[in-house]
Image 1 (tube, rainbow over the protein chains, first blue to last red):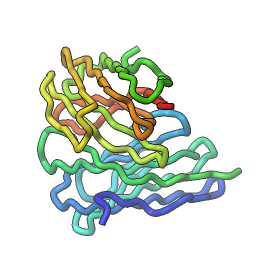
Image 2: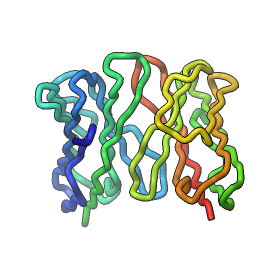
Image 3: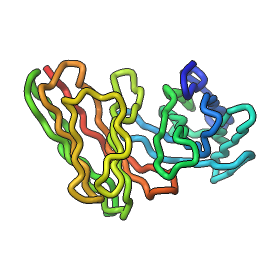
Image 4: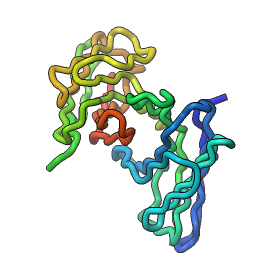
Length: 114
Length: 112
């Protein structure tokens, strides 16, 4: 089993719709979770971090975490063509230590079409 | 501008050569990383330094040698380059304990 697994893409949604990106992880002691956005040819850009169970909202983005199910998701409301990118789920797999060893999923390519 | 910067942005070289990539951050972070992103876009950690001390060393060939002269700089030297080393190498930094890592623009290495 992969340490961090994302739903296979690519994902295509119409403009204005909700895009839902999912991620599961295998290390039960993981404490921190991140979503990065990566445009083609660019570096990963941190868009959301979540540390406790529940929802965390930031603008059009909502991250959801369920540690019991080892599941983290990202919802993008009112999707825009500029949201088209690869979304990377990252999990700190060093448990509660101070040093962040991020393990990344394989990424989900999102395309928002007008 | 405050950021994580890398040089060079592109590096094209022949098999067997030795090359270095440099990274600098002026965010005041104390932990820095090297990641490799392969042709399938999979991003994998290679090394981590905290205040010049090596913290994480993943299963990386010892042809790769990181060096951190101070907490704002992390360099990567690669000896005897191989075709399989072709990838994009990203530097990242973080404040210890916070968890959020910020990435540099990447160095695209092509070995011919």
